[in-house]
Image 1 (cartoon, helix red, strand yellow):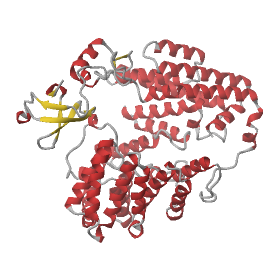
Image 2: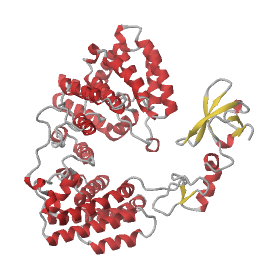
Image 3: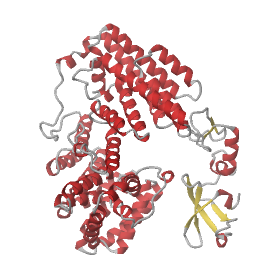
Image 4: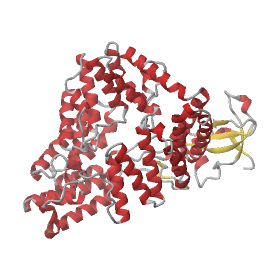
Length: 593
């Protein structure tokens, strides 16, 4: 579909405009090459701008990436970053005008290589204006981004929602644009982000402002609490542990990191709405009362410990999580009223085995969970998730018919979901035939006459294939430009030339200077480097020494479990009592070394 779309985008252009697009493609290739380098970026950007001075937003985006880190410490650079993004947007608008965007690609510009960077420029410009407090300008730029990308691949709607909430907070009343955004759809006729706390709790608060303590408001808030139960304790200050930004490595949907993000950004909106926190407290109390009969205290502890281990996705932690969930399963099987908890335990055990690569074992637990039909009738979301997981396992072991049967049940009992449709299409490709599982009337429109004669124009075809080759060659570099800039292993500095460790040549261990490499070597790297004689391996027998805050542990013997990258410590299991502790490498003496 991507190839067909790019082809049609170029097909109706005049020869002169096609030549302009060729210069855009060449300039983009130079920009991608510049993004992959640590020196000579400015010269390459100037070369790209000389080739295509007016229609290449990517040249400005690379410039913005180069100065964005330093802009946090300089007001002048902040202004410069804004000017660069403004020029990127103007360049993208000129490109869209040149292409004479027709009905085929209107509203879907992110899917086409020549116009994709225009959408990126709009998103970054809107985010910049939001941070600078220019809310109305940010709203209109983000609206332009969504209008030109109806599937909203970059998530501009999230920023737009935050802008609208901030405007309402400043004005002291709900912004009139909020209900339209909350009810909007993006491409697949599904309500936006039904799983995210930002949208679910915002819908709940808006309905409370609009209707008060109505049944509809209560139902929406209960749904939000089911999706993420960690938000109310933080809003009501039952739980005062608010994570710092440094600790939030990855946002876990439905977890505490997402709850922290939501509460830090939106607590003020709940406080400003009279009676909202009292209403939240009442609903949350009733919700807890409804859940507590389903699980006793021992089961709650096991579930909490299992979830923490499960969230790491580490193989050793997953095995420990299986033990916790199996203990929970034993408790759940003692009484009939624990049926929902039994299903949840079975589903989690199956997911653990699935992540460990044991699809056959995982499928047994998923099937046991699906056998509890009466309990699943009251929890369609959990039922759907288990069907998805079962289908994935069956597809993994090439039981395609079994996987299609799972998706058939999803369509029959819960409705048509884009994820399920795409999965069925993928399985049909593997089987080499249509299955007839997808409900009638859902499929895309048949190709038009202009699409059928794609192969007739060889000139456009050659241009297109060269463009695709450049796109495939530089895809990783483009992503690296925006999200994965390589940084020094020690000081985390980016945008400079980095050098490998000469002993291990680990692609994730690079340094910006000899000083950083020397400091890192003495601090930690010599204990984890593959080529170092000081390397501490898993299962090494160690003696703890030199601890000042816990001197009673000094002299104890233990086994090294693994190295924790996040804590920069080794996890050591003490032989005396079986407890696990985090220890600096300088406090470890390897027996026999």
